[in-house]
Image (cartoon, rainbow over all chains, first blue to last red; front, side, top):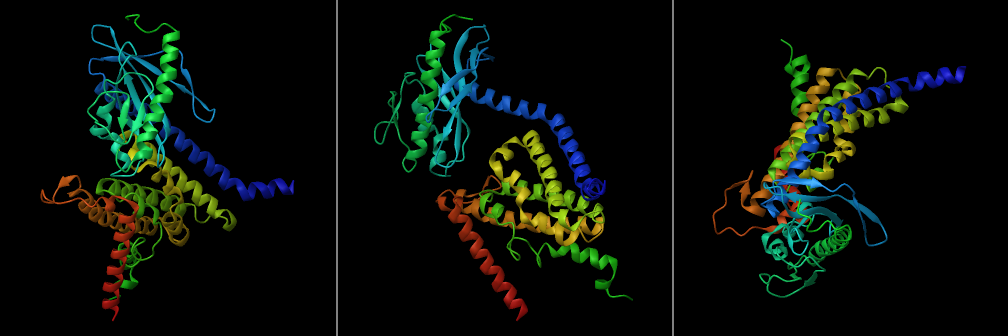
Length: 206
Length: 207
């Protein structure tokens, strides 16, 4: 009995404060989470529309696709079908992520309706080195992806960045970041393409 | 007539002003040095970080001050941490909801305010010993001193790294940006030079 009384005397403030603070966080989270989700969706929508200008809305595929990553890990990915104003499929988009030079890089990749060509990619999250690695957001690097075949891409150190083919010219001083983006796109694109082809989702119009 | 330094108003004034210069956490006490080095690439994120720290400091000092008579010595650190973590989480949620761009730029540095020693230091030194009003004034003074220090560092780095201040171009067209100022080396060099300058000024004043 003495031990219980001692325990209560010592800990009542901590227990009460934990409950009150937890409640405060829960209420704030409940009030703000719709707005946070709205911001996230708006950002994703804007970045994807930038890559697929004809798209008016995005329809999420019913099933999440499981992508095998390097090192044997697996990640579930949501794939979106981009629908035009006329209701036709104008492309596909999905989020992809992987390790960059400084931290995780997260991108949104868009491909055409037949999954034949990449429409481009936009960076969602990156902490790459300012002036070097963060050039993966620059048009010099990103423009090289628009219109290239949706197959395995490779990185070259020298070449013509305006030539649209599967060879992407690396950013000077940021080879690791350039390689990371290529690796992320290759890993996700090929597996998602296989899944979409297997399920017969390509070319079924609406 | 009583000397101003002995009156209540004098105490409030000294508490408020101490954090701005005499006990400035960044330039004089050299505590909480992670944000001054990490989030001072531009003024906007530095100001957002500074205001976030003021919010957390005011709330944490107020709550600590209100519960100061109930605190048990061996439980006080865990109570401070719990208290600080709550307000940092609320601040992080607000930034993600209403300033998503800033939240993204600041990244993990907002949640890291929890382990910023300025806040736990003020809770231990001031709020756990003083009344709510003094604790709030102390939080505003210390937080403002921290924010001003961040903005000075960020202003210098932003101008030299991009030619802009608060996003507005101020350097002439021919200016060559010093990219190094955006990198960690820029933060260390700028902070080191500022500390040297402040020490020199202080020494001259004292002499």
